[in-house]
Image (cartoon, rainbow, N blue to C red; front, top):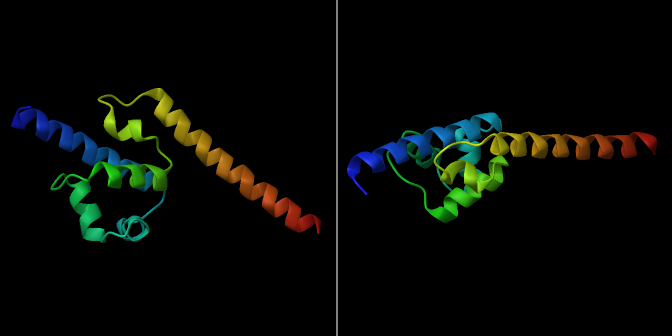
Length: 105
C-alpha cells in the first residue's frame, strides 16, 4: 500500500471517528474515558495523527452504536446510517418503556 493511499484511508477513518462521536453526543473526554484513553488520544485519532488498533476501533463502534463496517468499509453505506438510527430509536423506546412502567406504579 502506498503512502498516499494510507494517508487517504487514515483521513477518512479520522473523519468517521469524529462523526460517530459527535452524533453520539460524546465529547472527546467522555469517549476517551469510556475506552480507558485520554481525550488527547481521541483527538489524535480524529486528526489522523494516529491510527486506533482494531480492538479500539471495535470499542469506538460499540460506544457510538455504529457498526464496525462504518469505520472499515471504503464507502459509507446507507445501511450504516439506518443501523445507527434504529439503535438510537431502540434505546429511546427502552427508556420510554422504563419511564411508563415507573409512572404506572
